[in-house]
Image 1: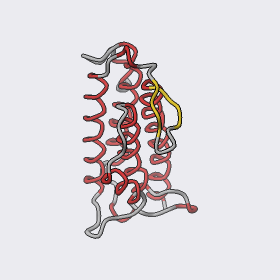
Image 2: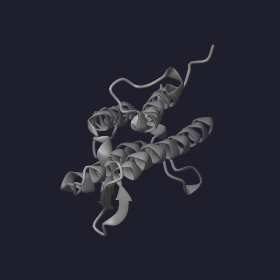
Image 3: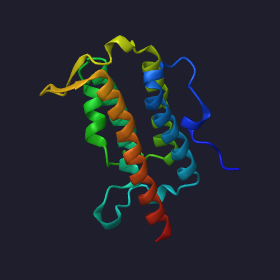
Length: 168
């Protein structure tokens, strides 16, 4: 029998019902990322098939977007370190990232995101939150949901890119 998806396994402990879909999506992305990148060759990490984003970019972006969007949900500004990571997306570091280092970075961000979800007061879900320097309008729930759906979108792109570069 196939493994059930995270949302099919029931409620996540210590997570409010309104935030279950966000938690389910983030944990599903984490599981699928591990499945698709088992034994992924590091030499394929930065290849851009047809000029599209590389697996390395998607790995960096998965971590970065969760971090940034959840920061805005807390009504906080981005830090200089978050801006450095944003600037680095799509680029290897001088020493050369391993696939596992980038997967570990995402795992750490998932852990932080899940902690934040468990600590989110549901009475604040409709509270205004400004996005970025322009203060674009959103809400706590809008940002948390966007973090989950954006993560799943880039996971899908990563999976296709990984399959393409491995097949060449």
